Length: 350
Ligand code: FE
Image (cartoon, rainbow, N blue to C red):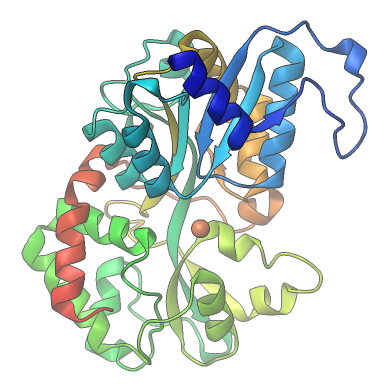
């Protein structure tokens, strides 16, 4: 039964990557790859071209073929649950602390006791029970329109609710996990009452109803449609190209909470599925993802920070400057996300 389920899944929807398939640079030589050593089935919410080169590299050096299913995180979780004990899923890769926490809570992930993983991934970037491990991180930062000057008195997330910023702030919807995770972290640090008052204060300062995504809000601030917004670092780094440089040059950056709790960071991460038919290969692949070359692939492809310390991000990210990150455990963020959604709704942050 299990074999049949696997075969069907492989035939219908997996995107298989054969060992050392032709790479974009054509540099890999098939004859240099090791012999086949089984498969690993990856369910991933990441979908960057650079990740493909990474999978091919792993296949080439280990002989383990990587099969992928790509979908958004919630769909992947539902799929694993629906497939039950016959799920072909070995490894789940997803984005957002809350989703990793929910995957762990739903019992889909199994603990992995690996010296490699616990040595390379800092404690605050993995589940205390070792059921998931962060691969990359991104910070949620304040941007402002440089031509209008650096907003005075804006150093912390809390300041965005001050009355002097009335009519100056643009935000994306509160349905974004990036905003939900941030408010969840504020609940953990400051308590529900303060987090609720903050959401209401920011809503009172909106220039316009929440709209668009981080990219369009960066463009709105650069164009002076509004003065201030909150965005993820990697979206800003995407404007570090000759064609888009004008947008980047028009905005200033503030890493919030540097004198207090540190700037809020979110993550992408992975965990081995409890019913994994190829658990050993899954652990090998997960360990490989924390290697220096894999960390560079993962982080550089989307301008994120490598989860493993001591590995430099892209120059576009480095140009944003060093900062103190909030070490709040992802599990704490995850636990507060449902409440954060309620507070956003109550505040009228659509
Ligand atoms: Fe994103």
